[in-house]
Structure formats: C-alpha cells, structure tokens
Length: 251
Image 1: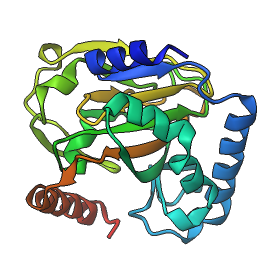
Image 2: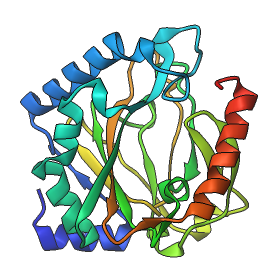
Image 3: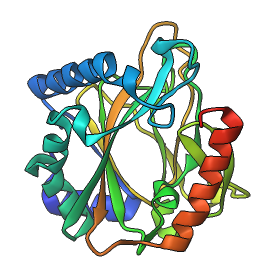
Image 4: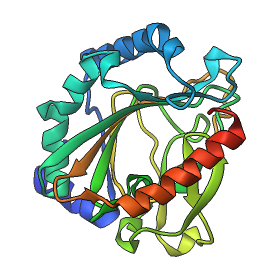
C-alpha cells in the first residue's frame, strides 16, 4: 500500500484511489463466503427496494443489495473496524460515521450499465464529504463492467442530476458534458483490490457483456463527522426515488 501522505494526496487530487491487494486471499474468501450466505438465506426475505434484480422473476439476476445490519454481524463489524475506518479517516481528514454496506453485481450478459453519477447527490450532505470503499470480489475490466472515474470531478461540487430510470441508481448526471468535468480513468482491478472514491467523484460503469464472468463488489459507505444531512435535499431526492420505484413496480 502507498504511504499515507501519498495516498491522501492522490485522493485529494483525483477524488479516488486504487489499493491493489487491499484484502488478502483469506479476507476476500471470508467476505465472499459471508455474502453468498446472505444471498442464499436472507435476500429471499427482503423487499424489492432492498434487494434489486435485473429481472425479479430470475433470482440469478440480483444486481444490488443494501444490507440490513441484522443480515449478518460480520458486515457491520468489518465496516466499523479499523482496517476500513482508519483508511477513510485518513482520506477525509476527519472522524467518520459508518453508514451502509452494499453489494453490487452485474450478472453476465444481462448486467446493465451504471449511469454517470455522484454518490453525494443521493447522500444529501452539507458539506458533501463522504467516501465509499468498494472491494472487488472478481477481476474486473470493461468486458464485465468495471468502474470508470472522472478524475478531479469531486472539485466541481454537486452537479445537476435527473431521473435515470435505472433501478439502484435512480439519479444520473443531466445536461453535463463529461469531458468538461474530469479525465476519464478506467480502473481495471483484481479480486481483493479496493477502490475508494469521494462522494462527489463522478463515476460510471458499462454493462457486463461477458458470457460467463460475474462482476461483484461490496461497498462500505462512510460520512465525514462534519457532514450533516440536509432535510430539504433529502425530501426532494426521496420523492423522485419513490416516483421511479412506483413506475418500475417495486413498491
């Protein structure tokens, strides 16, 4: 791993960092095993707004999961532990508030593209200071849908978003020329690598066009202690989200 000062400088310059081998073989195997157990035993009991599918009639097309803390104590313990929280404290220069744990998957052949967006638009924070640690469960490239970042875009503030009609990513950038807000970087990663991005860093991902390769990752979200939720921003976002869920028939 890079030294702390170089890591923080890269994060503050680009809005993201890539940490090869962040989890060793034992750690990533444990993460995968516990997630597979949740998918097998817990996901069938969850509402459509928590466990989302490309096709709700096909369990193998699970695309996104917002893990309840009660699903398995392993996940909140990992999220709240020093391996992750110390890293995010370093990058955000603040104490952090651990938030959600998320599972992302693009099933082969059917996993759709992720629209360009800023996580911070969903978080509704003032100041918008947060980060996601995104740990790859598979080797990822553009064939199966790895992340693309727009380096430096986190310095542009919260950009205009509009309804995307993409389940799990309800808001995407609207009326914005991506070439004007940052240099696009394709992050090809290996199993066990981590990507950490700022809440205002624009990112996107192509669909999974492979025949048989999964694209799975686990995300751990943290707010800086100095960040507070803006109730009015949150109300507007929730209204749009619920409208899109109704249109998609998931509520």
